[in-house]
Image (cartoon, rainbow, N blue to C red; front, side, top):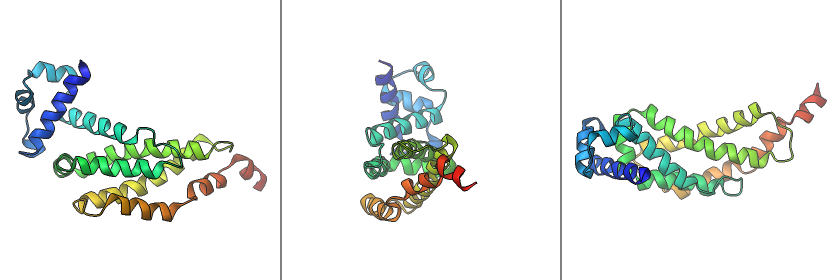
Length: 191
């Protein structure tokens, strides 16, 4: 029942965002729209921004479902782009009213989840320190999110498939090359 209630609050928030900016929406607006009381809202979320964050994470987990290996990272990234595009009024409103930083944090979190799994997949059989794997995933995370933020700022005009295809061509094989450079057995032989 908890998920049903959260989804009803999310649907009301998204409905409200079609009518007015996020900073003008109140908890009363949301609860009135879905026929709940304020206490029900506060049972699940501490404020509207908590609901926004939950909504973003739900959309992201659906987008990434099963797309976390080197062979499927392009599909995972494309699905992140498409999840953002499917929620364009929501994302644009949050982007404009919460601040770019909130959208960045959301995108960093979901993109990192995809990339660390890709790095782990590619690192199988290699001795690479966890800190180095995280460094590689973070490096790509910043590049991917930078592209996505520019795309959002440009009102999502370019087709996500085109962005992902160009990115795929650019970095083909680079994760494995990066991991190879950080292999513990290679580094020790050089010293």
